[in-house]
Length: 478
Image (cartoon, rainbow, N blue to C red; front, side, top):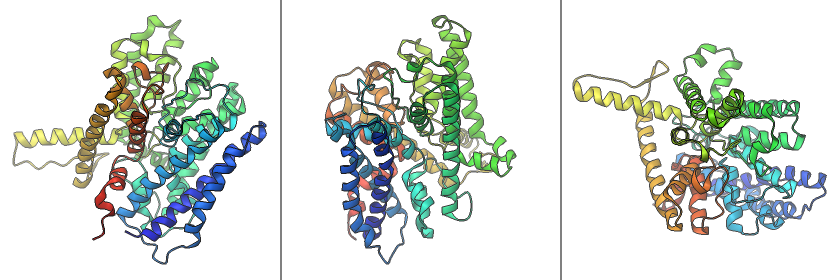
């Protein structure tokens, strides 16, 4: 383990977080609010990070283990420090609750312990939503975009970017990070402009777009997006939630004119097909609960895109919907969106790979001498990727089961505990029962909130980086 390089990278990350905190500090100044909570946090981050930055190690090489540890530790540290403005401002006095809210922000989950949101300081709420935008693409990707790194930095990208396979769009890793963030920023700005045209104020357009881009779901209204009572905004937000759930590599292919590569993407076709089918079924099931066909389609489209993209915004209380529709939403919670997007969930590509591998195993049982290869987008999938997808789902189910058992100590119903844990692990936010769109996670004990907080980080980093960070073997000297 290259401890000196690990310390240097973590110091850089904390200094970047300090820079990000200047944005909500400015918002607090504009609205005439106290900037002390942000100044204290920024000061603490600078004091802690500077010694590590000033002593850059001569050996800058990092490998897989350092990459995983750096990513997991940076997200944990960012959440620990990012919680300070909430506590120092008095918006969330309990630090454990503030840590939960911050983990939810950076992991783009959107689960909240706040019962009342309106009336809280604008600067604090801006930081709350801004953590979604930061966490959506990932602060490590941002670091790679602005700072030159060695060739081994690919391990940072692979540990942070979600999906079964990670690679460079262009030969230079830094250029890949710049392209990813460039697409991210352009899409975010486009949504901000669209929401302004739809009639939302600038502040609301900003924070809502941050939540949509990061597929997070924090809103500055108690009733989430429903509080605006703006159908045009709902269509815009729904469309962008669907867009941000698409693999960013496909946007790059569109930019360089490789439309055929986009059209042959099986993952994209499955993702969009599931969204369309879900909207259709939900419309049929909830038509009698709506005032007309437009509202029915709009609500079904919004909640489908919100759940499948793991955003978590809401315009209706789907707790009141029929059983079939709630079952569909739970299924979408599990699948999530595309790999390489800002969304959570298991990812469509993994579902496809595991399904095709199961079919292959059945064929092999029927025809032992046959040789079958899993294909995706017309290309053979490496056996290492297939094995990784299967192992991931096994680990995912193990973490889910253990977490459900642990939070069940609090005595909530199985529906609440299961869907709440599922929503946190898949970075969605609202579940069913007491943690549905009309509820939140405030009722859970501090113990359960810590478990769910780590579930959010497990889900955002796709389990393995956190397991490696917390494993004693990682820190054992040979």
